[in-house]
Amino acid sequence: MLLLLVLLLGGCGSVDSPEPAGGEPLSITGALAGEEDIAGYARVTGPREFSFPDDHGAHPDYRHEWWYVTGNLASETGRRFGYQVTFFRFNVAPEMAERRSALATNQVWMAHLALTDPETGRFLHAERFARGAAGLAGATVRPFRVWLEDWSLSGGEGDDVMPMRFVAEEEAFALDLRLEAIKPLVLQGDRGYSRKGAGAGNASHYYSYTRLVTEGALLLDGEAYQVSGESWMDREWGTSALSEDQAGWDWFSLQLADGREIMFYRLREDGGGTDKHSRGLLVQEDGAYRPLAVDEVVLRATRHWRSPVSGARYPVAWSLAIPGERLDLRIEPVQDDQEMRSGFRYWEGAVEVSGGDGETPVAGRGYVELTGYGQ
Image 1 (cartoon, rainbow, N blue to C red):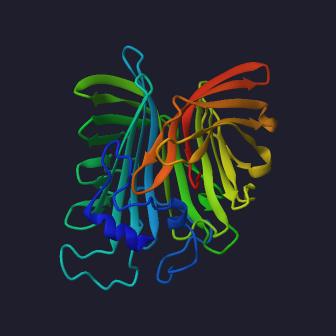
Image 2: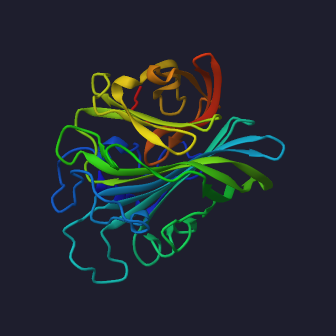
Image 3: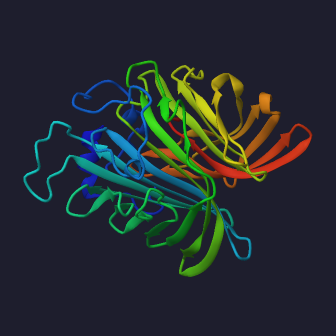
């Protein structure tokens, strides 16, 4: 799998490309699973003390890592947009000796960028690959910056990376956004130790910024929009996060209008059941938070959509209830077609949230990620 990433370095999917470069799409779950070929990598085996700003930067001894941002935006006239950007880092050769040239590296970078435009029903996306050498891609801490060519997420020089700036440009669209956290970061799982499977090392170090006030400029088809809204940022790194018997995951990040946020990921077993290591997090308006165990959340798919391009059938609408919090939510996509069709194929989409907290109506917005779905 990681060898295929290296082979893909010479090309990338384009905006609205119906087929990934190199043929069949690769498996995200395959990239994160298994105990094969892990010799020489660092492993996530328990909680650790986080150190900032260092942990905002790269952890090259681990096999994989990502900086992931999603957001729901609106123009000054109310036109709705959703966006996603993810910078991925992969160590493809932990045994590699000290590099002998400026181009030699065991670090491979990949980035995904997507824009949802519900007004027209378009879902625009792009994918890039680069070596982690010669300035093509990488991450620094002081100042904070993650980049792949001219796509970048950057911030301050101190312990706090806020505010951050995200900049990316493609032929059909471009984004230049300022992101400011209005709540402190939260540590997912057990003090940032996020267990994903029963095996030793099937885990990640994981933290999030759950509400980022966002404003800036969006360029689409040559027309400029001033936009504002809210974003969410996830940070994870590890080596073999998933077990071989896990088929994929359904991940939810929900920002409620009352100031609360919910994260929940359902790890799916090969037979369709819910893995016991599925977990979540509830963040209160004041930033206080607590973990959500798998038996605290009742999750049910209410509607499916089949991609006319890949044939994959995705559960795009859901009900999510947390009885202990009296929350009963309905989750609907802003449009059904939000399938990433690049070197990796998955569904990543902006959603609307409605429902109730007991008798009190609840509204919100968020993002959902669905991986491991076939026909």
